[in-house]
Amino acid sequence: MFIKELYNRFRMQVEYLGDKKPVNSMHPLVSVVVTTYQHKEFIRQCIDAILMQDVNFDYEIVIGDDGSTDGTAEICKEYAFAHQDKIRLYVRDRNVSHIIIDGKDTRYNGIWNRMSARGKYIALCEGDDYWTDPLKLQKQVDVLEGNPEIAMCVTNAYQLSENGLCDEQGRYSESGIASTEDVMRIGGGFARTATFMFRKSLIDNYPECCLTCHVGDFPLQTFALINGGIYYLIDRTAVYRYFTTGNSWTARVKRASVENLMKGWRSEFDMLSGLDEYSGGKYHELFAWRAARLLYENMSRHRNKRKMIIDNFEDVYACFDFKMKLKERYHYLLYRIRNVCHFGR
Image 1 (tube, rainbow, N blue to C red):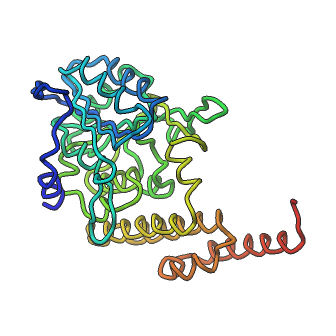
Image 2 (tube, rainbow, N blue to C red):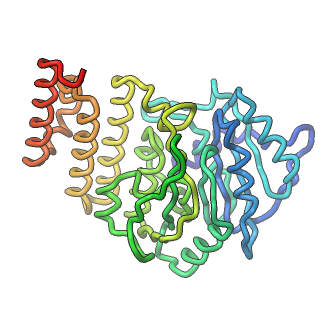
């Protein structure tokens, strides 16, 4: 298995426990995986919210710091020393914590963290997010234990921006199995990463096309869809930070050039193509539509680069349906008219 080969390749990295040998030998039901980088302002709230979980089973916290220089690593070490029975910490060198997979430079901090998990289930919470419900883990374990065919359980969440906390728009009014069409229509934003819990077995055969994708939430949800499905809980259990400044994911994307963004878009299109092949074409039309929709959304944000984008993604642009092409060309025409007439200046 490719992912197990990757795991074995980096086995020489050990948990950080100062001059002590690792003493955590528990066999947890759940592994909570935390990936963090430059999250000094947020990481305490993240870890404290995980430690407050009220459960009737053992769980561990696997933290991977990807070479933070702002003090995040020092805070994580403080927690690792204080909770050696529960926390396993990996402090990595960001200069070497990446690998070339299928010709693409891929960071493996998150991959390594998930492969290091020892639980039957894995829950995710990135270092700049946090949980609000002390029963979050218990609720999701109850769902997955009671529905052995389901691959993943997600929940509703709050969104926190610079302007303050706001509710997420709930996907459903009742808890239940998510529609494949709904997940693909909304994409990675269908559920926030901080609400994910999935079976460890799901990633034992994780395809390379998912590992090389520049985002992690969308491939994981899509892979779960075709390997048992996703259960959606209407409870709000977590907070997702949607900041346009600082070191949040949203802020880094906003700072990126269109040229760099296009590399990420291509990785998403390759992921959909790879999973289309993996599933034997079962969801071909849905995957093709999702790829076209992604390109449409990105073209709408970067109309000044329209020709360059189309030239680089002719294969995906060809998947646009008539309505999508008509809307895109109409809005591009309005954009050109405004520029020529200097409207809005």
